[in-house]
Image (cartoon, rainbow, N blue to C red; front, top):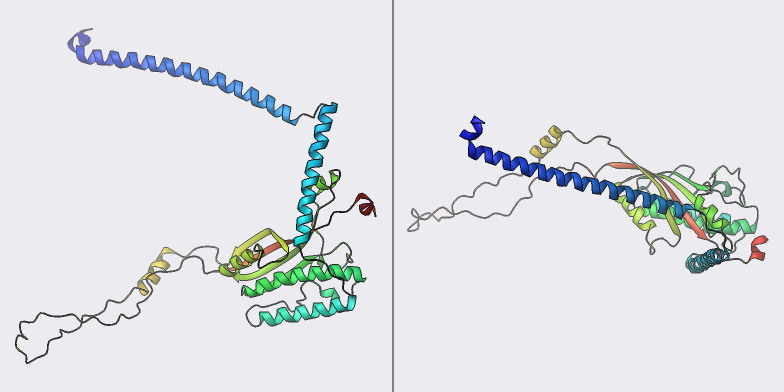
Length: 338
C-alpha cells in the first residue's frame, strides 16, 4: 500500500493495463469457444454430405431414369468425339506382306541416311520391327496394321534424328494383338488401366482407344530434348496422336561445380582494359605545348567472356515411353459381337 500511495501514477497505469488484459482475455475466450462450436458443426455437416454423396442411389424409378439418361448423354458425347478423332488420324491402307517388308527396309535406310554422323544408331537398328527384315507378316491384314504402326514409329525416330540427338541407344515397341507374342523385338503391351475398364463396362460405349507404346533411350543435350518433346506435342510436326506417358532424365553431372572453380574461371575470363592512346598533337605548330592531351578512340577488341556457364550445358540420358493412340471407329453391337 505504501508503494501504491507513493507511486499513484504508475499504479493507476498498471491497474488500467490489468483491467484491459482481463477484458481482452474474456473476449478472446468467448471468440475461441464460438469458433470451436462452429468448427464442430462444419465438420459434422461436411461428414454427412460426404456420406450422402458416396451412398448408392435409392432404386426408385425416378432415380433410375436419371441415371440412364446421364449414361446415354455421356455415351453420345464420347461417340461424337470418337467420330471426330477417327477422321483426323491417318487412315490404314491395305498392303501386302512383301510390300511391307520392302517398305520397312526403305524406312530403315532413310533414317540411317538422315542420322549420318550426327546421331549414332544401334548396330541392329530396325525401328523395332527386326523380325520382319528377314520374315513376312502372317497375313495381309497384319501387314496393314504393321504398316501404319511403322509410319508412327518412323515419325518418332525421324523427330529424334532431326533434333540432332547424339545417339538412339534403345528403340523398342509393344506388340500388336495380331502379332506373334514370342517376337524377339516386341515388348509386352502395357497393362490395362482402370479408365479403360470403366469405358468398357459402360453400356453402349466400346473401348475407344488402342494404345501402342514406343520405348526410347536417348543420349542428347537439353536443347535437343526440348525439341523432341515440342515436336511430339505439335500438330504440324506429328500427324499421329502421341503422348509422352513416362520421362526420366539423368544428368551426366550429379553435382554442380565448386565456387572456387567458378571464381577461377571468371578470373581467367576477365575482360582486358584497353590502353590509352598518345595525344594527337602535331609537333612544330603554334600552341602545341598548350594543347590538352586527347584520347584516340580505337576500334573495340573482342574481350574475354565475363560470365561462366554453371548449368545447362551437360549431356543427358533420357528414357521415354511414348504412347501412340489409335482411336477405333464406332461399331454397332452386331459388328462388335463378331
